Length: 435
Image 1 (cartoon, helix red, strand yellow):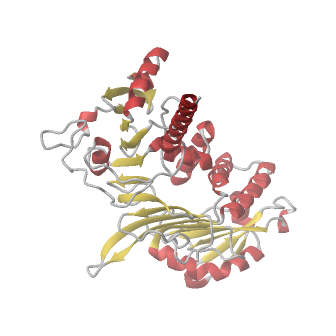
Image 2 (cartoon, rainbow, N blue to C red):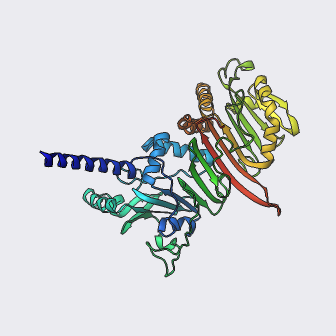
Image 3 (cartoon, rainbow, N blue to C red):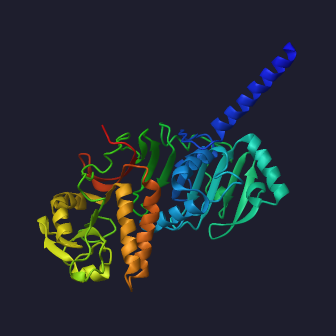
């Protein structure tokens, strides 16, 4: 009887240990880490032939945790495609790994050119999973797991195994492999991939040249405890709620404010766009735009500007007014222009000091975008491209409504006594009001 009890107790402990092992090593959760400069994925983050490098620790867990917020499968791909179109980037392609979002591994790195045409990925897979995955792939005829040619990155790519190192790409790994002390090697390192960041991060993105509104440099993703934060290396960390200092939204302000400055989406002297929660359609338009939320753009006469919803109509019939510092305001109606007027000094400062500034209350902004779509879809002859832009914003904002604040700042300005130019990117998704 005693022996049986001991056996039952041992079996229970073994079961608990197995469950605990699975939860710790495999279940989706935010799990930051530091790049291993002595292993290939960490080394590739710091050096390599391709100008874009994304490094993710425990990718099956961190990407799985993001899927809980941003969707999985086709839903995730729709979000990523819409986000890429909004940012002016190629639509991404994320290969799978059997039942996992990404290879169960300590770290994964993906390298690419700016166009996303030359791509290579490498992951150091857990030893037991490496053996099981290769065997399962061979039995199922799945080259993603077993190795071989696959359809990926707009053409053909090759999946290879080197021990526990899993790679997939349409360029040879050897061409982007940083040299080691004896010519390099998949498992050796010389510290050439010295730690990009000494603090644990959820991801790091290295850019040798600017892409869209991301400047050159290394950008780190952190879990702040109250949300997520992306910061360019060297910038302050842990400042959720202040990423776009001076672009926070007042309770009675716009649901979304976007400002373009030097190097931003607008050329010349830039401009801005604000979307309010209040309705601003109708007026002299015979009820055609009833229900349309209030919206305003700031622009310089003769310069480029953002589009209003129903741009073809409002560009001729909207309300115009002169603002401070030479700005002209064009809005859906006079009350929208009046509400936006006090923001003009703020818009002017950001248009001179940043390439892109964005602040939004995601839930309020999504509700306003939803009403824009309802109105535009009922208006005959609305441009299909305009509808797609608003649908993309709807897709991007929908999974962000769990956050109280979205703030983005891409800045270019003088730094230091020498007046050299400093480029910084800062994004905050905050779930709670700052102290």
